[in-house]
Image (cartoon, rainbow, N blue to C red; front, top):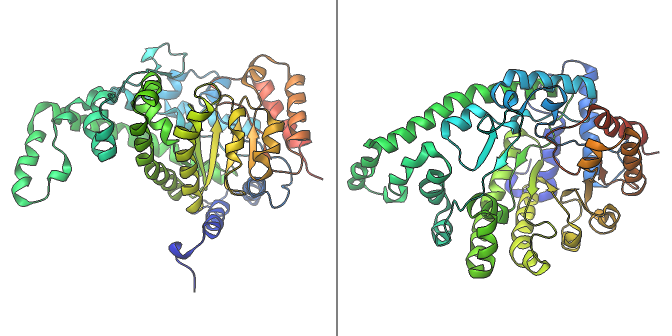
Length: 445
């Protein structure tokens, strides 16, 4: 008798997710060759992540935002407003570079949707920025310093009636609606509906509908590309996305300055807030993995890097809930994929606390030999090819850098070649060098 999901251990759940990754539901491979390419690529990643046996060679995982459009002369504006052109250049990339995995054009987003909802927290190409520019965050206190208790008490209500009216111009009217938990008896139904009759609320609801009308055909095109690219042998780079709880508050709600002040002025509320958001962060990552059939959950790390906060602050505010998020994902059979932007040299000792083969850490400006000796003993590590080298270095210099990573960090397995950061632009010659050199030189005997 098969075990139910609740009866399975974390390790058993992980194996179920690996099988779903290896044998994707609803994908009809175009040929025996594309099926073989897909399964060899997935197996290569699994072997590197699990660290039980050597893969056939070092895998290569390239993360980018506007990188692929840039390589083919497509501006960020065109990428955000013309999904057909965006998909076309992604096909060219797969055909030209033959990477170990597919691309994720969905991360570019739809400029049309963002305009409809009047998103305030970012500027983007053609909307506050030149059409040749990528995103730019707009720092601000989208949650006030005295609103922690409202967030902690009911995050969903806070998001709906407080944060969204500030972060989206089209949703300003949502601040007029009543809390939904008030809807508990027949006598409350009619009064609860009153705000939905006033123009600001109706305007917000129409914006939701208009955004949905734009988002649905956009995601249908993205999904069709994803399915077809898998049929051609390319696994997606990851299946779910979430964030460190501290970064949710510091990036999205309080802003950098607000959070830095809060750590001194109201540290207990900061801790309560990030603890409250931890199960929600886990749920989001697991939900993406469930939907995609892919076990990797991407987590970009922002404000835990060296230099942003002291070691004492990292230990107090950042690490406990990040660790809890990681372990929560692991318990559900997922493989957290931590994208460590900036330097994490002073954080490596903390990462040693995690169980074996529980996570994948991609580093940017971190000492990779030290990372191999600490984190890499138990968990797969990757990345580190500098953006500056990719954009200004020679092909030979890039090859030499990759060779050093393979010879040192890649020794014994547990390493995935990759860039230190997600690029918005790039050069064909240096990118080819990373992918081709790894394919040819990174073979395990």
